[in-house]
Image (cartoon, rainbow, N blue to C red; front, side, top):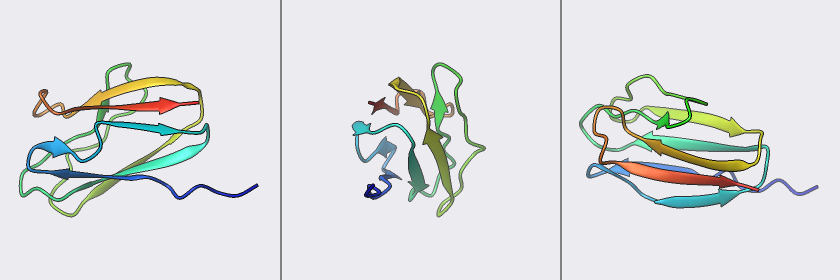
Length: 86
């Protein structure tokens, strides 16, 4: 079994770099904050939520169940993204 490169999503200029990412079950996704403001990564379904991320901080989550995970920054709710797990 060949491991897929774990996707990294940048947080920059009050946006997530990839609005939608599709990954296989078991994939670890990492978000890295490149803004100089605090941001969070929070799942609408409450499956995961990061602590506030300062500039340079990162948060990872392993997606072990198929589904569509809509997430947002709880400090800036207009920032949204989706992870599709197949």
